[in-house]
Image (cartoon, rainbow, N blue to C red):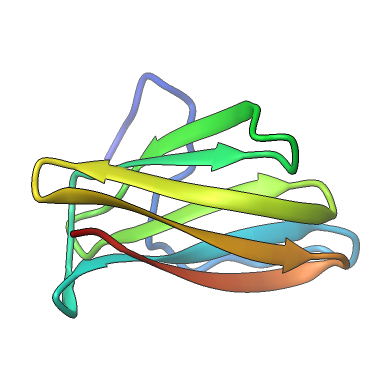
Length: 99
Protein backbone atom coordinates (compact mmCIF):
# COMPACT_ATOMS: atom_id res chain seq x y z
CA UNK A 1 0.00 0.00 0.00
CA UNK A 2 1.57 3.31 -0.97
CA UNK A 3 0.87 6.60 0.68
CA UNK A 4 1.72 10.10 -0.45
CA UNK A 5 1.92 11.55 3.07
CA UNK A 6 5.05 9.71 4.20
CA UNK A 7 3.42 8.34 7.37
CA UNK A 8 4.49 4.81 8.29
CA UNK A 9 2.03 2.02 7.58
CA UNK A 10 -0.24 1.78 10.60
CA UNK A 11 -0.65 -1.60 12.28
CA UNK A 12 2.44 -3.23 10.76
CA UNK A 13 4.99 -4.98 12.97
CA UNK A 14 7.92 -2.75 13.81
CA UNK A 15 11.52 -3.11 14.88
CA UNK A 16 12.42 -0.52 17.51
CA UNK A 17 15.98 0.76 17.76
CA UNK A 18 17.75 1.02 21.12
CA UNK A 19 17.12 4.76 21.40
CA UNK A 20 13.73 5.06 19.67
CA UNK A 21 10.51 6.07 21.40
CA UNK A 22 7.40 4.66 19.72
CA UNK A 23 3.83 5.41 20.77
CA UNK A 24 1.50 2.76 19.44
CA UNK A 25 -2.06 1.78 20.11
CA UNK A 26 -5.61 1.36 19.00
CA UNK A 27 -8.67 3.58 18.67
CA UNK A 28 -11.86 1.92 19.97
CA UNK A 29 -15.54 2.78 20.32
CA UNK A 30 -17.50 0.57 22.74
CA UNK A 31 -14.60 -1.90 22.62
CA UNK A 32 -14.63 -2.26 18.82
CA UNK A 33 -11.70 -1.04 16.68
CA UNK A 34 -12.26 2.25 14.84
CA UNK A 35 -10.62 2.65 11.45
CA UNK A 36 -10.30 5.96 9.65
CA UNK A 37 -9.96 8.10 12.78
CA UNK A 38 -7.67 11.10 12.67
CA UNK A 39 -5.17 10.48 15.45
CA UNK A 40 -3.22 13.53 16.62
CA UNK A 41 -0.11 13.67 18.75
CA UNK A 42 0.16 16.66 21.10
CA UNK A 43 3.23 17.51 23.16
CA UNK A 44 3.21 18.27 26.90
CA UNK A 45 2.21 21.90 26.24
CA UNK A 46 -0.73 20.83 24.03
CA UNK A 47 0.97 21.79 20.75
CA UNK A 48 0.09 19.73 17.68
CA UNK A 49 3.05 17.58 16.62
CA UNK A 50 1.80 14.97 14.14
CA UNK A 51 -1.28 13.25 12.73
CA UNK A 52 -1.98 9.83 11.20
CA UNK A 53 -5.15 8.00 10.19
CA UNK A 54 -5.91 4.81 12.10
CA UNK A 55 -5.81 1.58 10.10
CA UNK A 56 -8.93 -0.47 9.39
CA UNK A 57 -8.16 -2.30 12.66
CA UNK A 58 -7.91 0.98 14.61
CA UNK A 59 -4.11 0.86 14.88
CA UNK A 60 -1.85 3.91 14.97
CA UNK A 61 1.83 4.63 15.60
CA UNK A 62 4.03 7.65 16.20
CA UNK A 63 7.79 7.99 16.51
CA UNK A 64 8.37 10.57 19.24
CA UNK A 65 10.89 12.06 21.63
CA UNK A 66 10.91 11.03 25.29
CA UNK A 67 8.29 12.85 27.35
CA UNK A 68 4.62 13.08 28.18
CA UNK A 69 2.27 13.06 25.19
CA UNK A 70 -1.46 13.35 24.55
CA UNK A 71 -2.99 11.22 21.81
CA UNK A 72 -6.31 12.59 20.54
CA UNK A 73 -8.61 10.70 18.16
CA UNK A 74 -11.31 12.37 16.07
CA UNK A 75 -13.90 10.27 14.26
CA UNK A 76 -17.47 10.64 13.07
CA UNK A 77 -18.49 8.27 15.91
CA UNK A 78 -16.90 10.56 18.51
CA UNK A 79 -13.71 11.96 19.96
CA UNK A 80 -11.41 10.88 22.75
CA UNK A 81 -7.94 11.27 24.12
CA UNK A 82 -5.39 9.57 26.34
CA UNK A 83 -2.04 10.50 27.86
CA UNK A 84 1.13 8.45 27.74
CA UNK A 85 4.35 8.97 29.66
CA UNK A 86 7.17 7.81 27.39
CA UNK A 87 10.27 8.73 29.40
CA UNK A 88 12.57 6.18 27.81
CA UNK A 89 13.16 4.22 24.61
CA UNK A 90 10.87 1.39 23.59
CA UNK A 91 7.27 0.82 22.60
CA UNK A 92 4.73 2.67 24.73
CA UNK A 93 1.15 1.39 24.29
CA UNK A 94 -1.84 3.72 24.48
CA UNK A 95 -5.54 3.04 23.91
CA UNK A 96 -7.91 5.82 22.89
CA UNK A 97 -11.67 5.41 23.39
CA UNK A 98 -13.95 7.58 21.27
CA UNK A 99 -17.54 8.29 22.22
